[in-house]
Image (cartoon, rainbow, N blue to C red):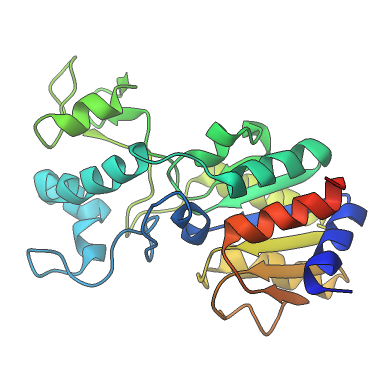
Amino acid sequence: MSDVRRVAAALKAAKRILVITGAGLSADSGLPTYRGLGGLYNGRTEEGMPIERALSGPMLQRDPALCWKYLAQLGRACLSARPNAGHRAIARLQALKPECWVLTQNIDGYHRQAGSPPERLIEIHGELAPLFCQSCGAESQELSRHLAGELPPRCDSCGGILRPPVVLFEEMLPEQAIDSLYAELRKGFDAVISVGTTASFPYIIEPVFRTRQAGGFTAEINPALTDLSPVVDVHLKGKALDVLEELLSHITGD
């Protein structure tokens, strides 16, 4: 049995599934992959500082224009692309499996756009919209208008500085997302699939380790080897879009 068929058979037999996704999945939509905040950046900014400092919570407070310079680049990249067949394949898997969850590091919103149910989607790094005012809390859904205007964007109601509900560097992960993840982890998963992420964050590794230790099935889809590769049952080498479509065709018989 080929590795793809082996993974497909495990997913078909599984009741509770967790799909973990990272920047490699959205790379097939044309978004650059990146470390940390959804991708797009490596190394230093034009100002000579590490991108992690520019895209940090403290920088948003200290120099909002500088932080927003790079937030806007990220936002424009996300708005100019669309979900790909990999996102749609995951949404189809969730339609077939009512207890299939998605844990994503991506902030582009493509899982929602592709049809993943929001109640089974954990966006651990938040999302780009709606923007909200740090002074009065008012929300604005007009992300594209603000990205096209003067930066940092300001609240129409009070003039305060807007920000997206994303987790910047040096900020805490959203409590609700963490609670949802660990509530589902306590129930256990029959299969965990990691797609397009090289991250070694505890919330990425722990579901894989826990599931493996409990006798569940684990797999990884990535063009390159990662820290998880020696741990999982199967490493499928390739682009997320191609591999996910092939997996779904075996599961559905299409």
